[in-house]
Length: 94
Image (cartoon, rainbow, N blue to C red):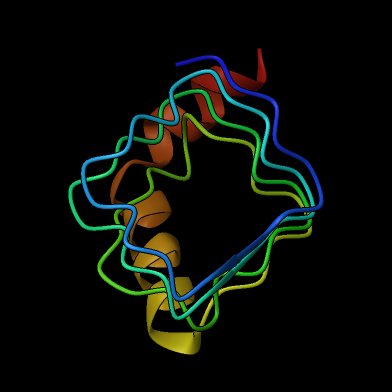
């Protein structure tokens, strides 16, 4: 979709099936927002807060997540995803 929406508060928003491909959402906060079936591909989520967001799936290998805050369960999912795909992580560094 290629949007630039920085420092935005998504408060109790229904963002189902939103396309955030190639978007910059840096420093945005997703409080109580439903992100089911939303697309995050090459999306910048730097310093975003998704602790209270629900039903989202973000691939940590093809999105920029530096400084982003997630709830504990989602953070563990990212870690397990990275471990399972560790060969891809290494290749991305070169």
